[in-house]
Image 1 (tube, helix red, strand yellow):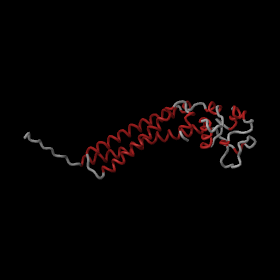
Image 2: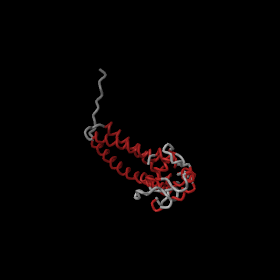
Image 3: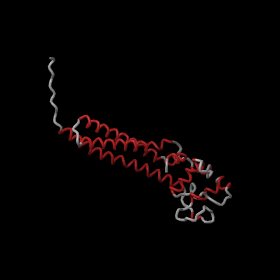
Image 4: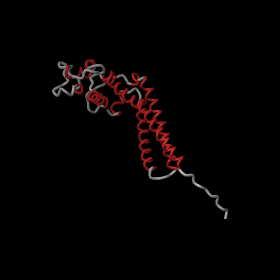
Length: 212
């Protein structure tokens, strides 16, 4: 589910900061890996120092991402905007971004309504369309003949989107939190390896140049 479509479910955009920092640290870690591969064929003190500097930056970014992810995970319920308001504004139009977000969420998370499909009975869209159908995105994909009619509720997804969305966000935040110790252990091993290489590097002799 893309952030552009799901942003209407968040009370503010700061909840995406852990993911942004994690992606930035991953990109720098990839760059560090390329630099480390270059170090294997070139003996350069400057490149070794740059390599260590990049690893320190990666660790700082990953630590910030982990701290923010833990902070948001403790108040996840308040981070998610009231889904009832988003579902109330559903129009069913493909031109409406909020309606697209609702349909995409119900399809990908396999849910229907805020708590269950009965939440749709309180929406203006349900009353305007005759009070017989829920959106087709509520249909369980295993029932190909599902039309979203209320006389066949077993063909609809049974769980609501509130719980499913919280579970999905909690999984992402937990992944970011636990990835930080793993990155730290990997970087510690790399630090020790680079330190050993720099210690084994022979000292260069410098000569004082004559004034003439």
